[in-house]
Length: 291
Image (cartoon, rainbow, N blue to C red; front, side, top):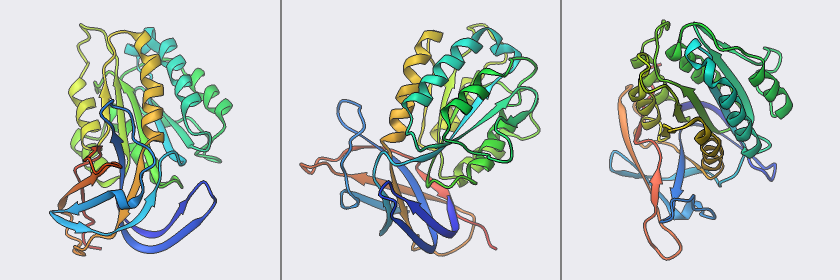
C-alpha cells in the first residue's frame, strides 16, 4: 500500500491526475445506521490520522468508480459438489459489478493459475469472464496460500486505484509452498480489500474458517459463511455493492522513514448533521523498507 510511482487516478469524468509521491492508499466503506453504504460524501467529510497525527488527504475518489477486482476460486476436489452453485453466484457478482471494472480470475487446486491469457491479463468483457468461470473442473488438493499470493501480486499490476479480491474456499490448505504469514504480510502491504466466502461441509476435516476471517480482517474486508449454497446468491451482489460503495483516500505520510514498521491509521467521517459514521477499512499498513 505504501507506493512509490507516478500515480494516475482515473475518474469517470476521464480527468486524470498524476503526482510523483510516496502515497498511502485506503479503500473506505462508510455505513449508515441501516448498515447500507453512505454515498455522496466529499473529502471534507473525512479525517485521516496516522499514529495519532492528522494527515492531509491528497487523493480522493468518490464511490462507484471502476476498480481492479480479482476472483480467487477454489477448484479442489472438496468443491466438486458445490461447483455449479459457486459459478452461478459468481456470475451474479459480475452482473452487479461496475461495468468498467477490470477483472481477473485465479483458479486453484494443487496449484494456482491465472484464467485469462497473458496477452490480456485483465478484462471488462463479461462474456470472457463467464467462459473462464464455467470451463474449469473441481479436482485435486488445495493450494490456497499460493493462490492468494499470486492474486495479490497480480492485483498490483492493475490500473485502477481501488482494488479488491473475493476469495471463495473452505479455508483449508494442503498443497501450498507459501505460508499464511507470508500472505498476511503481502495483504498488509497491499491497498486491496479482501472479501472471503467460506463454504464447506459441516464435518469436512480440511476446513479452516479462521484463515478466511484473518485475511479479510487485516484488509478491512468481511468474511461470509453461508449456511446453505443458495445463500451464495445474495452474498456476491452484496460484495459487489460494497466495492462500488467504497471511497478511495490517499495521503502522503508525514513520517518519511522507510523502516518497514507497521503504522496504525484511523479514518473518521461525519454525515450531513455532524454525526460520526461507521467506518470499515484496514487499521494500518506496513511502511516500505529501506531502498
